[in-house]
Length: 544
Ligand code: N01
Image 1 (cartoon, protein in one colour):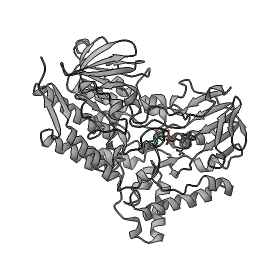
Image 2: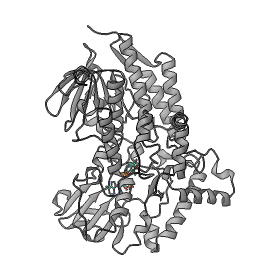
Image 3: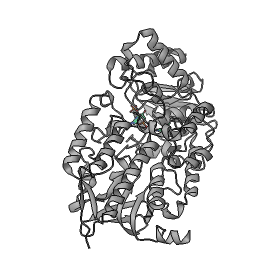
């Protein structure tokens, strides 16, 4: 093993084949595939002090996957799938982090990862066709390829609310929760934000805290997760046809591992529709509710309204105080990332929980004592920002990435990101992204595997043919960007502001950032590019 360590990526190598950025689901698999699979010399970097990516950072109470775990794991190793025993259908953060640590050990990945180290810059050198990479520790590494698994939802978003620094209590962001945990018993806690993170943390901490004040800007549609053990029958079916199951995940729209519906919502009677929604409500899962009930909730306004109105009625049934129920009820399109929760709406029936509707009383400032809205001051001991992320592009633009002619990625994306197939950028040769902009809008782990496998094949293609570089053509990228735009605008998602289109971060260009034709169509396109000898990509001769 030591010999292997010396030959293909140890922490002292400054000249490597590949630098992988990040050690979450994406980065770990990339390291495994490229180092253990292709035998390349690889070094990985992570600013965290351990593996896990999003599951390393998001340690807030209630944090767990809301994708059923039978599709929220790796598929590349059947033994790994069989040996790891998940306890729940939607595992909690510590269990997923345990799994990723197990993967790091099982495949001997840690020795190639430098933790606690940020990649500060990556500049492409056209004379050598290599990337010159600088780290926060002052190290310089030369790599032929860079593979970025920096996280879609990782760069934290703190809203610019006056006074954050003068609050006398403690301030936390859900995605930077203290490793040692927090004792919130009896405390007066304010939570700003009611997305996936907010709804989870709110429902979880309500029973512990003294008082919980939820500051809500826009209400959310959410359905129950219906936590519980993994149905044994589901596991047995997967194990009986392991390859067939994963192939069906990769050929589906969402890659969530359930059967999606192609029935138009308006093609059935109202009674039937309600029964379908009721059944999905009882089975649980946000993506299931949106994609397994009917095939057109994301595209047809009438279908969307039917799904939305069912949730609105449920909120009215669950929340006892009519004024609170109304404030919690969304009236816009059901076209943000679909949520599921663990008793979120019922939490507002607890005596110690109150809702502040920021549309009625906006926040004016944070004071030393708490939050001052236009109506009053709320005194707090702890303030939690569940305000999400500078999604998709945030972690890329933090790095000083420069491609051909010193072109800065930040400038290239100043009016919104551009990329080909969610994994390559014109003008930035030998740089690959895992789940970069214009990638599929799907469950991530299966998509990571598909992309990493494709990237590994592309790298292998360059090396096998003794080429120096591979780079997407501007024209191919233009076509993909316009296709992504066209597809997205045939759905309802761009009509609602959210992180999906960059609208959650003030000043960020609002733009299409996903390929919304589904995973199956995406896989077809990746295969087509390879079948046509890397159509749309230019390969360059090596430099000597
Ligand atoms: O972030 P969000 P998130 N004043 O952007 C509010 C994944 N994820 O961390 O709705 C007041 O969705 C904002 O208000 P509004 C998942 O993909 C998965 O919750 O924009 N409020 C919103 O309520 C998810 O979609 C899991 O009006 C402000 C909230 O903050 C994605 O990460 C768990 C504000 C942000 O919601 C992001 O989820 C967690 C301001 N100035 C995350 N600025 C699971 O798998 C923002 N807000 C379960």
